[in-house]
Image 1: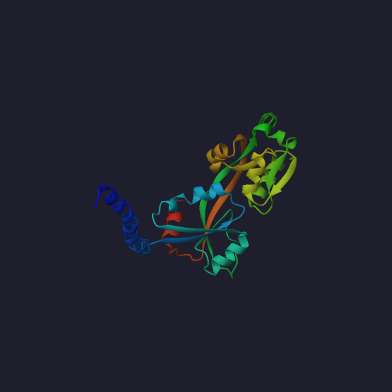
Image 2: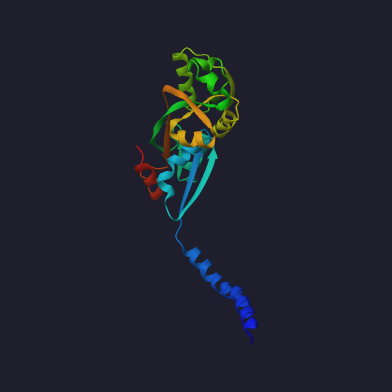
Length: 234
């Protein structure tokens, strides 16, 4: 066998060696323990806030995460039927003797106003009274924070120039960043919001907070990752 032939032989046998090792690799992967977590996410929650709230469990090395976004009431039904491990929402579950679910506060975040570059100068002048003149985007009444925003407008004697309302917070940010209008968002996501969406902070929505809750199907939490989620927030 020449050196050239030997070289070809080594190259040709490499795939066969990998092929022999592959079943063992697959077998090892299948045998690895996984920690499955099924999370229902209310569609009014900002996705950037969800990521922040989920941070305590994201370090689990064998996590298998399934996130389902839906209407709040539908998620509570699925939770009661044990189709979900936990629900993240902007409100606690309402009292209902037929629905055995339990709410845990994950804290809250002050609201602030943000503007795209094209509207920042006009909105910043005489803020917050400027919200009566510049185009404003708001969450719909579907979101718990909307009622608190309406009360804030009344306290400040502002009749906002609302040109768009959105159930989906991701759409609200997307249209706002595209220049359609200024919009409120939880300060919790300030860094991601200003970096990703290239919007600027106008100022605080003083006295208004967005609340976050994790809702479980039993008073005694058994899932270790749900326990971790609850124990690291207040």
